[in-house]
Image 1 (cartoon, rainbow, N blue to C red):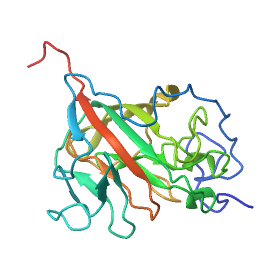
Image 2 (image 1 turned 120 degrees about the vertical axis):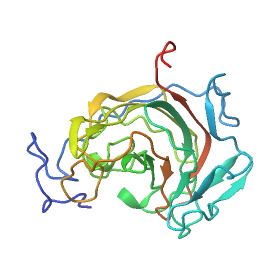
Image 3 (image 1 turned 180 degrees about the horizontal axis):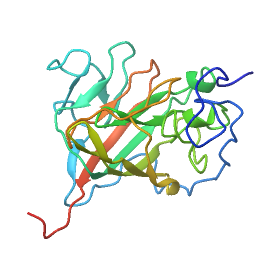
Image 4 (image 1 turned 90 degrees about the horizontal axis):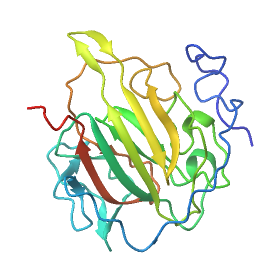
Length: 248
């Protein structure tokens, strides 16, 4: 099966096309066994809870702003309801430590990008890919934990389909002076205890099959989760704002 594309632009500073299927695949690394697959871990005492497993009162539809999120909630998790669209938090925040737990369907259907696909969008603009890449090849800048369309992860640390996966993301948003970018976004991503990106500078907003650039925006924004048509589940979503304890 051919994967990826060879007719997309070349990424700056590389010899690779956007979503290039010939780009080297990240090595497979077996993550440590989780302490439990049945229950989410407790968030830290200073965390701002975005989803605690009970309801979606803190979320809304992206395609119909102000309308309730159309995903299903049961047994402590939310699940994508295909074709209801992306959802986003009503809360807006900037630099943070974000924690998200997710699970691809236990029943394997599809391949490459068609298998357990969703996404975590910081500020609604910068995607960390959610995908079932356990024994499932796809283009490297679209694999699990990729900064979508920009950088493959350092490792493929996926657990098996149907097992819970854990993202911890350290996010520093971009800074603008009017229309001018003065500081690019930077991100560290850890999946199941394995570092995928360390302080990686983003090229701009994430996009599909095109080169990217920055679009000036405020320093805070909502978290988006993607409806890509697959029955992906999420639980235990929280963030901790990143600022010094002695800042006002």
